Length: 347
Image (cartoon, rainbow, N blue to C red; front, side, top):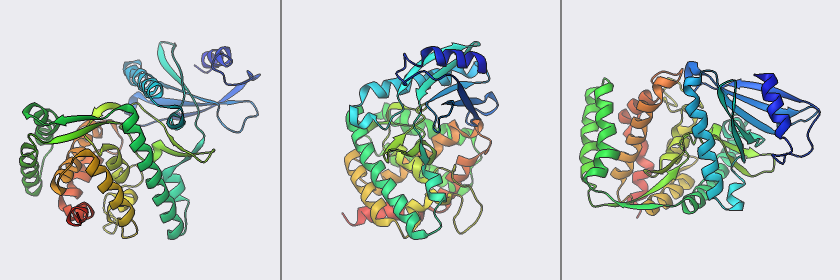
């Protein structure tokens, strides 16, 4: 694979407008976990003597999962072509999709930078950590607002078919697949009643990145926000999904420590006393824009978000049932939504 990959890259370097073709290149190879044993493989490609990667090549070890790579190539190109010049600077420039040794290989320009969790983890002082998180949330909020507008927002008057497809269907699949406690079953019943009560409500459906956790958000070497890894992009979905993913994603830490709960560092965006003003402001702005008219509706969106990820992701990860654990924690500690409810009480 290395020799063929090198041959393809060097032959297309000039065509891809990457500058003068180097005499040679080197690779750093990393295996991702989200495809489990199929092994998504990412190659960071460096010109000899270069300090930063010039491009990235993504493939899989198992050709049966090649569709995931093809989808990422298709999604990134779709988003790239829809966005205006200024906002697309946050998106990796797609180069091409090729086949090497009967495996799809997707090439994109590298976006050197530091991932959000690394920035936060490197802070020893709470004051510095707070500053970084607040700044990131502000920038993400601004970028997402522009992203929604440029990619297109669709206002949907919810009817029975929408309520079934977007709310009741995933909830019923969750109930059938997961062993639930009595408390969870009661909460599920509440959520289904909430969903049915939404008939006739106008809600804005938006495009979503689909994997919007800290590892997909970089501070680029140019000091600007970068959003990478578009394999789960969805052009039209329920609102708040991306921000909720950032807020509760267990990729940062999953712990049984009762002080932080299972939600770890990112969950502090909802519960930590440092951040209520900035997060509350963000939520109220977005909730109002989306047409979510009650705290209960936001809570339903939150629960549905955890349910969908429990169904879609847990069987593909080494952290078995991680999203299922988050759902349990959420149900047992629904007061974690107090920030949302507080926002509504101040309307």
